[in-house]
Image (tube, rainbow, N blue to C red; front, side):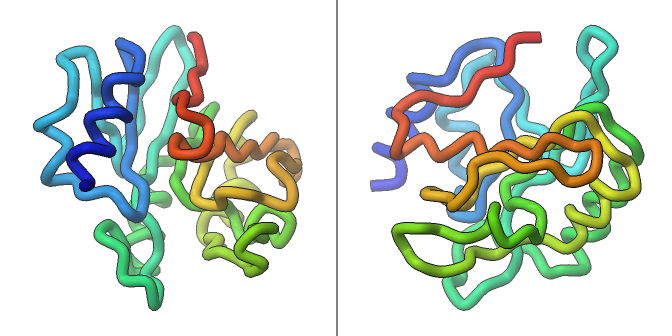
Length: 164
């Protein structure tokens, strides 16, 4: 089943593209579906046209035991290693209640205090994330940073694209 979902997802993915993992992703399967112009970035930065972008994939450990979960310590290490960036991409949102509440599931999803701390320290212009499928708020400001939930592919059937 997951291979079928990846087939649909990667077929819709534009090229070139920078990608990072979500908590339900199985990184070992991605090479079967990646196109040559796709670059997976996780715990690292990429600079394009003078814009420095940082990526932290995966989710935090949870009772759901999804395939790509990190301990709090692993997550903190990855995000702190980025240093300052202009744009931050993570799978999970910062620990901001309006951004972590899922209106359909009627619960707070996992948000990251480490991400919130990063935003307050480095103030990137933008922070793009997903994880919360039906958020109470899809965007909010954390200090000078515009935070935007770019949704989930299953619901939109289109990847979120930023043209640099």
